Image (cartoon, rainbow, N blue to C red; front, side, top):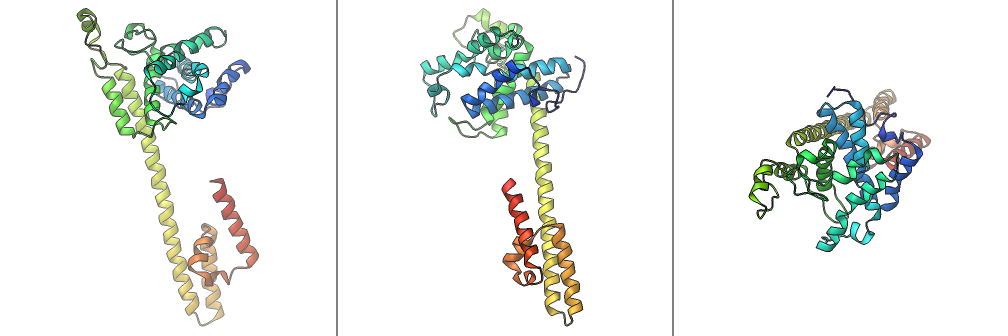
Length: 312
């Protein structure tokens, strides 16, 4: 496939909801259901888009897959809330009801001409390459490629994200589980006919090529988080260095014999304060400095800091 960059966050693409009113209504219906399903749908769509980029899919196919992914759980609109939001493990009967969200989602899409092209997302995203999935128990040759991509993205986010019915699982443990699901023979029913086993034994549940691309996406995220953390630590170090300099200036200011010298160090402190608003720290540890700052300016600085903290 031709390598075309698809920006998931571009205003002309899905993230900005540049969709017709009917489709936007269908997607926004997830908001009225529960926040976990909506957030999960957004996460899976984003992961699917980024996996497609590493698979060198065309822009058109990437956009198509992304919308399929966004709609993959739309069938959960009609799953009873007491099952969908159950805090504990589902019973066998409840799980059978939960599984119907695939066919329900397919029906929703097929009944709407504008959603019909994306029906593969809801219907096939729980199928497994080795035939152990649902609702039809299809094998690799019968599972659309877009569904194979969505399955990997869906499985990753479903495991790693904290839900109302489970706690958070670490990224490394999640990737291990997905690797296991890509291994041959995973999940096969040993009572199956030997002829069936021989034809699918070389397949795992998910496509290993797609899993490799998922790893690249996850590594990108980890690298980004490390970069942000390092930048944050650099800022903290900068603040500490500035704090030490202010402390030195305060000591010299207090030891100064002339007003000229006192004002000199006070101006240095003010310059450092302009670079970073450390008034809150100074208020706690260096109250003498506040005497040299007009009260109206103190209030302005404090108010500005409160506004910033409230936004964060």
